[in-house]
Image (cartoon, rainbow, N blue to C red):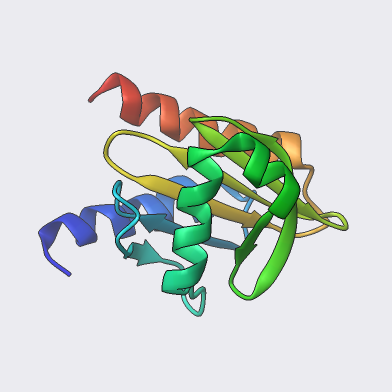
Length: 131
């Protein structure tokens, strides 16, 4: 965990958790090699990261298999090369890919997926557009 991870931890804390939409959040390295930063107690296994990589690589695979994050399986309701959205009952995950990182936000049933997605996609657009 170098200086770069400290920056990503700030994104997790302020941009993602600070949005009020998520109860858990994490940022993965852009090559799906590991977790750069996360909210306390939110662990994503190497196998789960591999599955997330597969979901971005093949939207049909994502729709058939869903994604597992933090030990919970989510059905994919959207999958393309920039975003994967998953639902489990009324809980959900929103995963957004940018050239510099992959952001994951988990929301409870108290939050609408559309609101959670809007919050994290805004950060994604910012990161894609440069500073």
